[in-house]
Amino acid sequence: MPAPDDASSLTRLPASELVLRLRQGDLSAVQLAQAYLAACDRHEPTLRAFLHLDKQLVLDRATAIDARRQAGESVGALAGLPVALKDNLCQKGVLTTCASKMLQNFRPPYNATVIERLEAAGAVCFGKTNLDEFAMGSSTENSAFQTTRNPWDPERIPGGSSGGSAAAVAGCLAPLSLGSDTGGSIRQPASLCGIVGLKPTYGLVSRYGLVAFASSLDQIGPFAHDATGAALLLQAIAGHDPRDTTSLNQPVPDYLADLDQPLAGLRVGVAREFFGEGLDPQVEQAVRTALDVYKSQGATLVDVSLPTSPHAVATYYLVATAEASSNLARYDGVHFGHRTERKSNLIELYSRSRGEGFGAEVKRRIMLGTYALSSGYIDAYYLQSLRVRRLILEDFQQVFRQCDVLAGPTAPTAAFKVGEKSADPLSMYLSDIYTISCNLAGISGISIPCGFTTGGLPIGLQLQGPQFAESTLLRAARMHEKATDWHTRRPALVTG
Image (cartoon, rainbow, N blue to C red; front, side, top):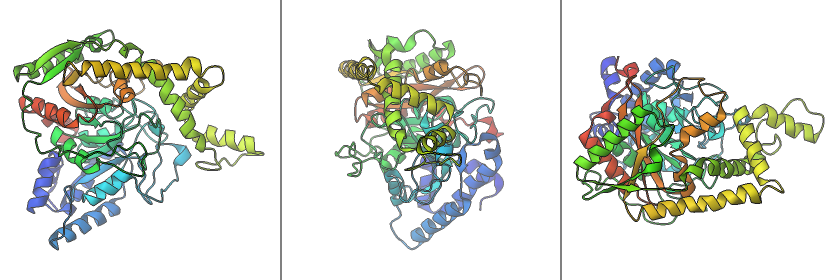
């Protein structure tokens, strides 16, 4: 195993460098796993990014990868590389709780497709990360078990709902991780933690084995320190899956092949709606500086408009909660989930099991969704939201006739303090004001680091593209990285 100082430096490297060292034989999978496990021993008590981390399982997998490599067998593109998993992804025989008491003892009998593909690529599945319960939240404070902290300031939240996955990468506890994004749950925590987070086009990555929140919005995607790492992980998990009826059957491009090729004549759309009331001036300044970087590289900035975007938050919280109400109906204490000990009849069994198993935010969203779907209200609320959703998609389609990517802030502010917005759900919901539309339209989006506040908190730039524009987004992200060093910075918690 590397010496402690060497191990600490090792965990700060980007995934692409680690993959190269593993392939060249300069580093073994076991050495790398041990380095990250040591980092978890040091920093996990502060960050609390993981809900479950079986060290022996990690080391056994790493040992097997090393043995296969030494035997000359084909080991896959990610062989030996640790990848942390959001705890709403089913992993066979491993606790998969969705950060909920409802599923606190659930061990799936099968693997999610993305986990099958990671294992086929030789990755080492590295623990299950914390999240807002059933992925419902923007701060990872809604977890039934613990609150994850931001590596840049442990007094602040890491974002959500994939806060554990983002904190694990930003805190150098894992080089890569997977999250899920229903309304910004990859991009918003990526922004607040100063890393790259990509939400793929709906249908590009299989949802089989992802515990559903809102089925028409959920999508699995990567976290990484840089665009190359995100491309590596997306390459491994993307592609058609017949077990997911929403999976799209089309070829997956090589996201790494042209990653470093400049995007000549890139047209960057700047929507006026992205720079309105509620946007922190420091965030706006960092984003506008990032736009200037693109302009200096030969890109053209194009003023555009998304006129329906002011209705996105209301639309999302009708569509998402309606689907959540339906998806979570199965957790009744009989078919699935926690079963109460206090029951005298079937109705009491249902009500007590759900009351004990679900947290406050999940209950709130179930009630909102049930109301929106109820007789007498479904036309006025749910069906109307579907009409507005269509208008939001049409706005994007019109804009992408004028530009290649849209650029703007990922989140309106940097990370806020733990507890600051817990009593104000509406304020919390507005944390995703810039990310929600992407999910409603089913298009692609990425958040990349573009600066820091005067208080040393990361700021993210969001790039959005049409469906299946992941290659363009990744190359555009890489263009920005070549001109800046934001993606190379690590928190003092790790470097100190």
